[in-house]
Length: 133
Image 1 (cartoon, rainbow, N blue to C red):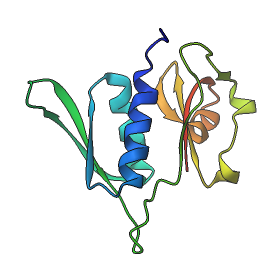
Image 2 (spheres, one colour; image 1 turned 90 degrees about the vertical axis):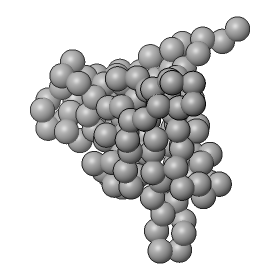
Image 3 (cartoon, helix red, strand yellow; image 1 turned 180 degrees about the vertical axis):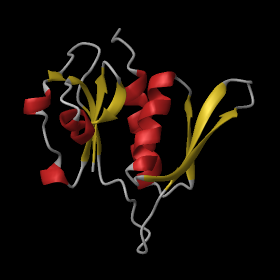
Image 4 (cartoon, rainbow, N blue to C red; image 1 turned 90 degrees about the horizontal axis):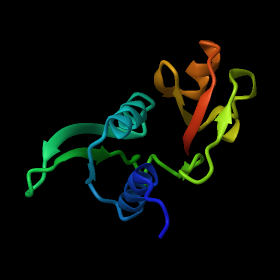
């Protein structure tokens, strides 16, 4: 059995919900997922999010998806980089750019989860979690 990857599951749920033009998507809560969702909001990829409870009383994050005037999803792609089986790290000097700066790379650093751009500015590297464009 493959190791579970909750971050990849979250990205897949968001990607599928955006393609299906859903208003919102619910994902199980974790500190890391919450940090990633905060970055998606800050960078303008989602409308909003809130912590809630599902019917079973489990804590979830409800993400409100964002669409442009043509009803196309603002998120064109979500891609997991580092996986439980293959961790990918980058120093701040070699921080990859997503689509020449049009996308955002989300990095887990020693001082929290941030974007690749901010990590480079602070001169800290870290684990490359995912790309969004």
